[in-house]
Length: 69
Image: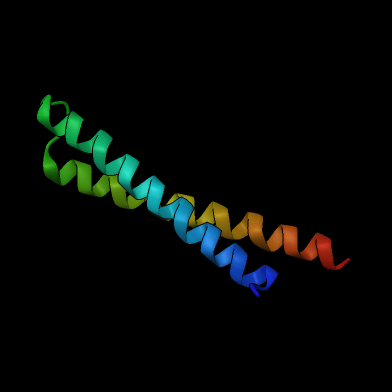
């Protein structure tokens, strides 16, 4: 039914969705408490999502390369 690649894509989307929601929740708490302002939160949110996406991509490509060998 699903191929290995489509399962990986679905899992990646679900995981990144959970990370986005967790960051939004934590950011909302920090903004409400006055620790961060909304502009700083948006910059940190973007940086973390970029970092997570980059690390995920490297790990995925490394895992695929070792499976093919």
